[in-house]
Length: 122
Image (tube, rainbow, N blue to C red; front, top):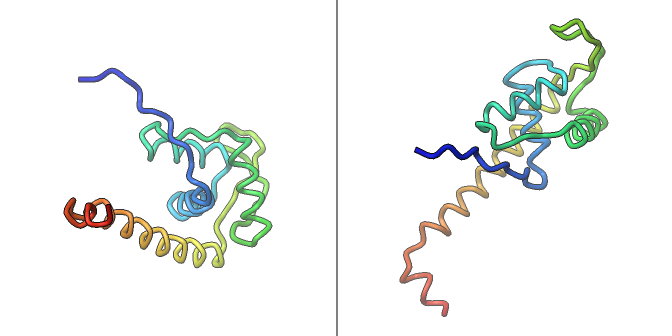
């Protein structure tokens, strides 16, 4: 049994927005810290976002009309901006997931390719 911690995972370019949108679908309106904590939890600690990465993504999503922010109070009685996904954000997340699923399928097929087929190109 290994006592090593999971290695930290870098977020692939373009996937952070989708992960944030899906987190808001799952959790409902949430503040940045809760979103980051959820992503860390779901990844088993392999994905740790700093606020300098997350907040620009939230601002970008808000400017694109995919999330809507409002000020509120956290469970610890602190003022925070809560973000909720908009209908346009739900449509965008669904379309992006379909595209990501296609890409994963293509990559999986490439790795499942029989060695004899791969050797023909050499």
